[in-house]
Image (cartoon, rainbow, N blue to C red; front, side):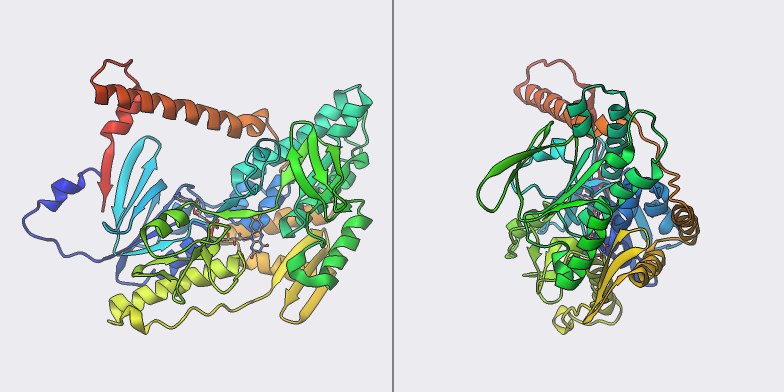
Length: 488
Ligand SMILES: Cc1cc2nc3c(=O)[nH]c(=O)nc-3n(C[C@H](O)[C@H](O)[C@H](O)COP(=O)(O)OP(=O)(O)OC[C@H]3O[C@@H](n4cnc5c(N)ncnc54)[C@H](O)[C@@H]3O)c2cc1C
């Protein structure tokens, strides 16, 4: 990382080097691709803007105090420690230059780039507010560790504030929790917030009864868990209603603010629900890197920003670039972990075939997805599982859910501690991760403000330098300007 690219390029004798594979993303697609290349005669660089591999399906358990962050987000660097051909780089990719075959990124104010021979892009998806980005401030989504910690602190903070407030109306608002989106994440969150209120927090407050909390699961669609079909959707709905969760379907959120949400019903009438804690799990938008790739190639993107890939997951005219996981659009495959895992492994296999066996991209077989089924938990001891035509709900489904999730957690130690945490939770609804801080509630918004201020300061300083005027020296702008390095 010390020598700029131009200096290395002027070396007289070209040094033979191995095929360079750059992987963007340490999620399911990126990590499994990297691991699949372990024995390959290639150099792998995995770059991601987070230093961990996040097991997103269990984020809701961090948000509701069952699991710790470490159990579901081990450091990628340690996972790949023994894989000698792999390097892990922390960096936010801001540009992919498909002509130069270069990925540009920043780590703080340090800008650097990575050259590739093959590129696997697995940068996932973000929450989508369907064009209403201002909703995010009041209704955070759940995509990252930060989101889960913020939500945990928001949820617990509402109970704390309700305990000390005298105004009855405000207390009701504080004890109303709205989850927007009745897909798997929404169902899991609604079930857990209800259990937290009714069991875990029972008898721990003196002025309020946590069980009086109102938990509302709301969706513009007419069904709960639509991808699971009517039977399982109805089973999940019945279980949630038994736990006291209010289900409101065909209800379109038209506004979100500090006080609550505005909802439009099918008859066109608009109503408000006052609630302090709003949680958004209603839609996803693929990483903006997809659009950037489409703009430089003949690829198209769909409405969710996903890249329409070839049958071999590559981009039109660029057989060296694979897009996998939540960022890719192919044959209506869903945005689930197995699609990303299988896509990552498939891309790695094609690279091995070409680098080691001399095959050409034209010989690639089309990517075939093997559907292993889907599952979602509804509450303790209750889940729904769909595997082909087999549909199971209740306790057996929950046991299957437990086994599958344990099997896919990364690392033996994490599996053991997770089993222990689950054991505590099952045998008495004990949650050992109920720490919450004010910082977790406000950090996201504060960081966004600071980052915007800093970016503005950098722009001003750069402009002043270009114009030759003496602007107030800005240390961060200076650092950004000087630290441009190349990583090979
Ligand atoms: C709350 C929740 C629950 C879920 N539950 C389930 C479930 O029960 N079953 C299931 O099968 N699926 C579930 N999913 C979906 C599943 O997690 C995703 O389909 C899967 O994670 C997609 O993998 P991916 O590799 O494409 O992206 P991700 O796992 O999202 O990884 C994206 C990676 O890219 C990195 N990245 C993004 N942008 C940049 C950038 N500009 N520069 C550098 N790095 C970048 C991120 O840091 C991250 O490492 C759930 C998702 C969520 C959010």
